[in-house]
Length: 126
View 1 (cartoon, rainbow, N blue to C red):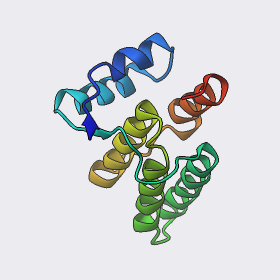
View 2: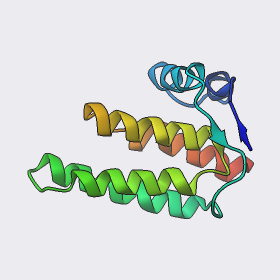
View 3: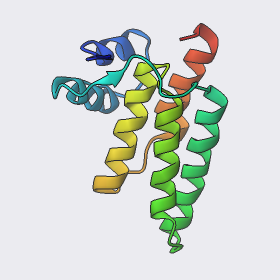
View 4: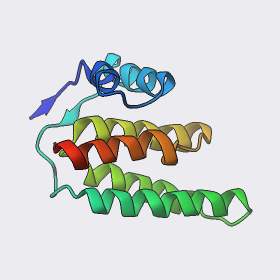
């Protein structure tokens, strides 16, 4: 069973999270009818999400410095995406960050947008 999230950008805005560009990416994701699983394929874990995002961030920096770590970074973003299924807004934000990096080379806003979302869920729960 899946749920098409129609108000993700509005929810991010209402919670004061994300930049207008980030909200637009999430809204675009939703407008195209992408579905987010309502039942995670495995247990979600915020600590695991942070671990994989941190690893991806390091690998992206090393890739920028000439090391061949692009695929590994994408893999860690995918793992963070998979670990975040219990939190649909976070899941969509990570998915869009992965796709932006994978398709266009856009480095996600790790220190801003994604950190704010994770901190919000830590304080308020799913």
